[in-house]
Image (cartoon, rainbow, N blue to C red):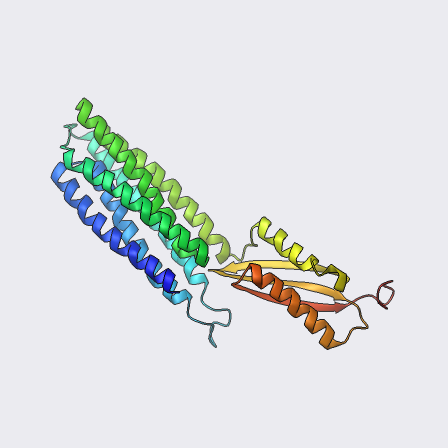
Length: 293
């Protein structure tokens, strides 16, 4: 939890600084692509604040009203972040088209080049840190924030290249064209975030490779039960929920079956620490050739 909070707070601080720098550079230069990046970073800041609070809220233990915990708050946070990215892209497109229809005077891009270069470098390090913590802590909110900032790296580099071309050629319309390209990239990133965040909200199954690994962990105890079936999985924030039916020898005592279920649960939770495992044991058919073992 401390690592999550530290990462989220760092994201808020870096985005605040970048928004201020980009707004000042955009106003000083008159560049629509720099201002579009300032808006993008402003959305980054809002998203980072949402992520910071959602990480804290999602960590609250289960209570009487929310028996399965609050993990889906992280998924909802990521969905809101994706929507905000798309809204930002729409504003950039509108502003760029308005600039294309107007005068094409080349903006003064000197300070913008420095700000865009610094922004790309800062966001690369911050996004790498967020993605690393998100992977360690299994946090959807931090992953969304990190991917959002990683998109900002690429768009900042795109604006940097566009401004450099404006400075070399003196062609003013290149600036809003670059802004349009940035908007397309941002829209794609926002759509991908929304798509990824909404799956857990709909109780979609875990990724195929995770389900395959869970099945192999169950089967590692195959010499102690007859079979298993009905494997179901879902995710809420960083929590995984796994349940299945386990067919055991009908002659076994309840204590023996309980100990077997505990061993299987521990094996799964050792590899997927934030998981809740529910096993429904069933007696084998009386005609089962192994029921007397």
